[in-house]
Image (tube, rainbow, N blue to C red; front, side):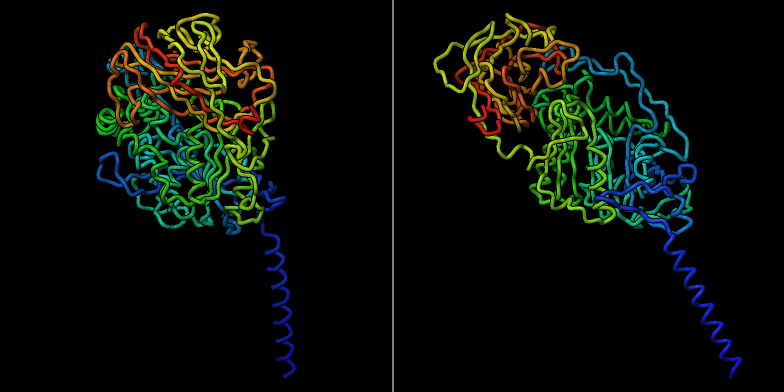
Length: 609
């Protein structure tokens, strides 16, 4: 009995010692750390030399390169080593892109020739080949230094038909939504990943919690939205930065063939060639099927009408299944991917009841929200930390003129809820300057401008006298005027030809030509339209020379404070040298001033004006 008692005592002591050891070890396990609602840098995660980096190929549900096999996407993973040594599971921040493996070189003839009459087709352009770059296993280093030390795993993938990802680029086609969905399905254990592009050895995402956030800029910001429209389980939050949300709105404007700023003559097939860095042996098939058939038959550079081809590449039409939280980010002076792209999606998501936020700044293309803001959104939705993101009373953050990008001003919403429409009418003044006033004048003479693409918009707005534009300005502002929302213009016009470009700039005068001037000093916002589409975006008809037509369209969204002492100017002209086609000069547009007006959304309405 005595020995039995001693044995039991020794076993109990041993159990207590082992329990203590395991308890201490458990307490010492590394885990994410949070402060003020944000994930903090953990030194044990901030060890780049120990990060585990590997790649794999995730099988999708489609075959777009015609080889009879389901396309596989090339995926790379960067994760803290504790996901192996301690069995640690972490959420994922995921970025996908068509650019990781290189792009086509610049060459003469790559862009469409814009110097031709409206309604005519330009000569065939040059099709460049992409030399593929990059080696396994690393696809990209973006996001890694920011998020891995804060307790996330970072995943990258090349989009279909780019890099080592199989398939074909479609520039907004269905496969570019289903590809990131497949990667997220794999991260959640619902899809298969393999060590090789054609092998059968599987790879499991045993280190993933199944919670995924996506972000990226430009095309890389489009793909998170594309993934979210599938409603894929596990995608909790997306932060698209300057995303292209509709390829129609990127390459067309209110029925007009219009180039994105800085890329005169670009169109959707040009972008296809630019990113087509995938398997060289599959490119001929892809070119024939996508670029030379689907795109050629659908993109329509003749009329610029909205059709089924463009509707299928408009993510606003695909948001029904979306459930991810959404923080949009965009610049009000982004004339490449224009600010309407984010606003239209933000507005729809808000109407759907999704948790939404929008961050706008005053600069150009790109510009993510402050790191602290992104951190809070990812921390809440991926780590489950209650940091009041859902209960935030302000849904819009706008960087005011001259402020730091990291110091946006919070507002209840965008547009500013206090903004009210103010209708401005035109008074005659051509070829010099007319008036822009809240007073309605009737029975005015009509005014005519003569198209000439060789003059830039800046040259036209600065000219004292010219018949190549019509310019109407307000009196000097007696106080600051805060514009917030989407200006709308109605133009009643006649053309002496069956087709004409119509361009509109809203400017702050006098024009500041100091090289140190801010981007907000001169151009407030812009818009373009095809008068042939006065009935609808989907239907155009030749104009009858001399007949007046009324066309109404939105300018780009804006939130800007025009300082007291400035004047707001409305410039109406025809061909915009940096954006539209360049028909032979001489087309005349006659504007009926009585039938033309501008509606500005102004904080405090007439009182604010």
